[in-house]
Image (tube, rainbow, N blue to C red; front, side, top):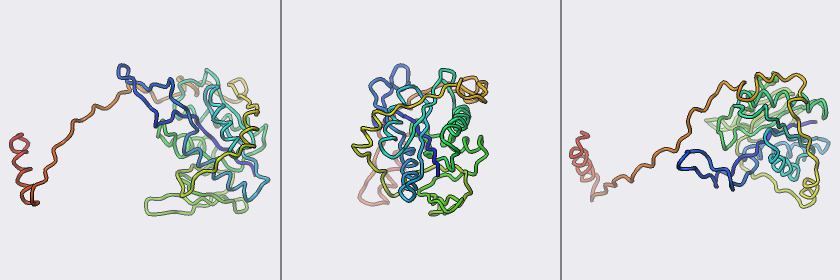
Length: 267
């Protein structure tokens, strides 16, 4: 069984700061982490491997050279191999271009590691919150997909996914190869062991550039291949504190509210 997990290195949102003059993110000095939801996807793959030790888990990320740190963290937790997709030609890619580049990269990694039975992704990246890349990869590859997964198990040539739904939990079965995206389950991901950490630190992570992807069309990558354009980024204006009306009774509070609104010419 071969599982590919797509991961992204993102800024730690608890440390996010905004430049008040440019209204852009201040990235200098802000720590980067493995996208939280991608961590859940990796744990879902690890739980499948717990039941079938012959399972191989490969992690794939697109980003700058520093993203190898996130891949090494995944190797320390549960992954067996890791690949980084990085090229200046890919810079500025929106979700559509990113999913296209990743789908072409997956084809290349399959030449090296064998066909993947399933692809796991986080439901969304915490720095973008679009929830588009995973489903778009499935469309590029022509795979069945399940979103908002909580847990997954293999049943023959089928993947059964317990997924979050508005009215509870659904169980969806799809034929492999397939793609599933994961949200926060009831459990926390496992921690890396010292032994795996030491091995991950020594791991050599191959980088795939545009020249390594034989079938890629660069017109669909980078800024050129991105139909989404960010025209402006801004910080919402802070609102001043409101007024709290709390009289002796509800009737008196209502009268007070009416008086305040009347004086303000609102009613």
